[in-house]
Length: 541
Image (cartoon, rainbow, N blue to C red; front, side, top):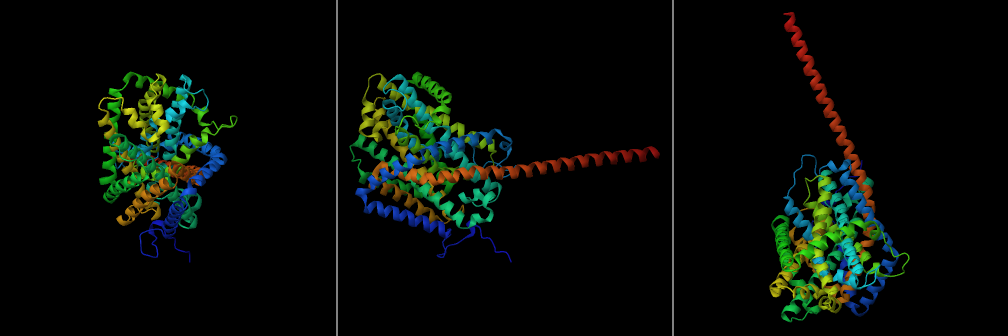
């Protein structure tokens, strides 16, 4: 007699918790060991983190670059191919959320904190030290914006689109659990419910936790810097840890409320505040220059996208890319289980073409305009001889946004809004991440007990706090790149699996359509024959 297959979302641990035991406990143990070792060897941790990051970046940087380009090309192909017409959840499925709510949630989960942290600092860094041009020149300014757009644009969102589409399709169209292992069903079959599937989900949990910790760490550093700038409050590690605790508490409340009442509401309010904030900066700042730079920056990025996205420093021998592009690709890949799974949960009922174009285009265009409004304006100030922003970036990168706003009317109010916005994105990232990690560790259960969601919300905050204590930003970057590498390999396989699954379903769809056409034809022919027979009978009579 064949062994009964138990789905991952039907398993229970030996303690009776609604979790997939191997994934839950293995992930929890690895995280606890990491936290403990970082705290015990705090003095040596930063050095080790630096060495590990350099090793991974030097050996695997080319692989990150190749992989991310493959993901973007694959997503564009699916959007404009015959597969674009397939609807997630079946051809009769309807979207659960309005389009604007959908955009708000995926943007809030995807990049909120990081964009606020780097939108000024990164362009200034690249302007001072560009990879291919002389620093502090007009050419350096163009290059700075090109590479910033590269790091935050189509490639980043292609990673999210790949994971989100794969999960949404296999969950809602194939009826599989909402977890990363389900994506590999065309290759592995029921083996996804065994050790191989457990290993995939463990990698996904670790990548999510450490990717989230990076964003949360950046966010809390910026909030602390803002409070110091405005009120003189110490911005050290103690303050940062206290902030993590307070904001994690708010995120936990949101987690308890769930997606519709908690996450959706917060995401929509975040976007409202972000739009108002952007409009104020646009109106009070150099409005015409912002629009001009947006057009030029976008054009420069699009015209050079092939060159800069495949550049690997092969002939320069420099390490610029290790610190920037490789870190970003590792960061986005590490974030992809979290953001992808969250996008999947809110995307049922959309066609593949609608999904991909929505995820790729809308957030990217908004991001480009945001970076132009803040980054281009900061560079322009530097070109005109105002070193205030440059000095702020060099002194403490986390203060750049607040120093930038000092040149605007109502600077104090704008800085308060900025702090609220950062905290809001912090909360939406944390609560969305908790729901995702909980889903991964339960084998794909969508409505697991609240206590488990609370546990993971607390764990996320703890990881961010400990990594900040143990090694600051370097530790966060290292954790991201190291966990992102094995998951990049998983994403490559995911492309093949998704293609195979879609091909199978399209064949079935075409077969059903052909069968329906045949049935309709037979029905029409039958009707015609009946009418003729009736007419003949009437004529005979």
